[in-house]
Length: 377
Ligand code: DNO
Image 1 (spheres, rainbow, N blue to C red):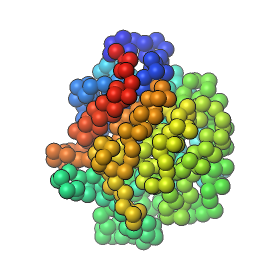
Image 2 (tube, protein in one colour):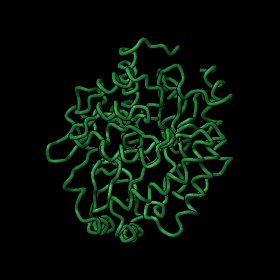
Image 3 (cartoon, rainbow, N blue to C red):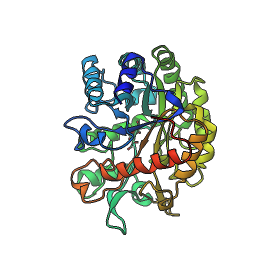
Image 4 (cartoon, rainbow, N blue to C red):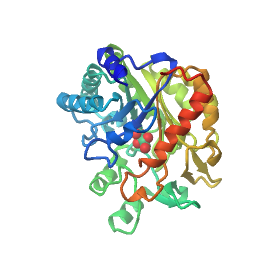
């Protein structure tokens, strides 16, 4: 580990290292995560911490000292901090408002600072208004654990009615972006997105990528867009990263290795029509970051997150790891949402507890090493 840290400091040599992926762990920062770096160190095989400055809103400048402070903290604990998830994109950029260039300039400034600090991959999404959507964060399973759940009929009703119900205190509805202080502006945002259909959103995305990708090439930073979650349009808002066709088009908007993908199996896998192994095969050389997790779909469109084990859900993680291994995947990888087990839902961020994600790491490493010769020393 020490050797790796030194290599990383000397020139960011993790990416592409040894033809072996880099196992990472998403950590929300000191004082912002109930899990400590010391605990993460005891999970075998984890080399990188996926981080962000979570208190900053989309469009805010990332202060250089804070980037350095976080990288130092992570490296001192024996990890690399080469992946940031996320640098969020201001809605003006997605809407294509007249002030978008100001926000794109700030984004480029962040890319430059992160690249110079040793960050190699930035995970982000291009979803209008909201990031992922779930209707229940603690849906109980038969084994007594609980996990994030999406009830289609409940989630996909009229957003204005939903907002009213939440404000009236009548709806127990938890989603990123639906924080009470943001609800008032959400209605305005919905109006601002009127007229932004799939084509317009794609054009706005192309505009953004055409401006930022040269900076990424210069500072050796790979962008990795996160798929839409769930992978279909909701609330009348367009979604442009949700199927093989959409991703093919996205990667061609600017045809550079720096315009890449976060391959999130839990997001894409909520739509049974997405053939994940075929998609990973087709896009393997543009996948810079893989979020590997499992879920169980209901034919009515609901889905629940489950353990990482292939047999427990509908995502063929075994087939995917085999494919990535065969394709010499050498990007970053992390377990994704875990269930809450052994009573930890009281303490952790929903989906980001210690235990089930640690089990996920071990499952993924088991598959990984079984499909190869475990070259990483
Ligand atoms: C959910 C995450 C997403 C992801 C963003 C990337 O747990 O995978 O929130 O971080 O969509 O911008």
